[in-house]
Image (cartoon, rainbow, N blue to C red):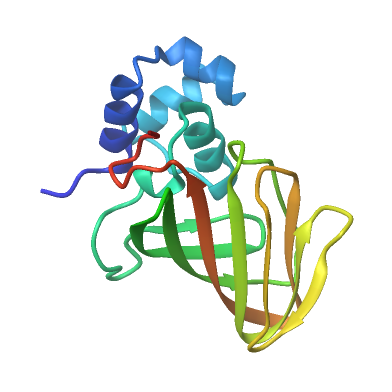
Length: 180
């Protein structure tokens, strides 16, 4: 049986020796919300998952299903972003996670991730405006940008939905969800 989000979150919290109260304090997510997530009584949006994994020093993919995406498995949503984890690999001293994402025209504000995290966005279809808040860049199909993900940043499609490939570069990452 595949692990649910709740099972993965509870396991990850236990591996990091973090109480429910401590995770709530570190992440800014309410204790009740975390409890409901761990008991699979609610789903989580992209911002919530990033807040929890950042507080635990783990990559986002630590809370998503392993293996190839099927029927929406591993999909996470934010205000403007719907992303599916395609895979994660060690790359030198980093862990790299690869996501396929669709961006809508509403702006997605993303809080800073853990120190040293970087993101690379490559546009597959459409036009987007992405990057650090206040310094976003416009990109068209075939163009890429890499920027610090440990600062507030934004995503937005321009002129209709856009498809991108998003690489999350975690320093010192471990494919099992921890840091080294």
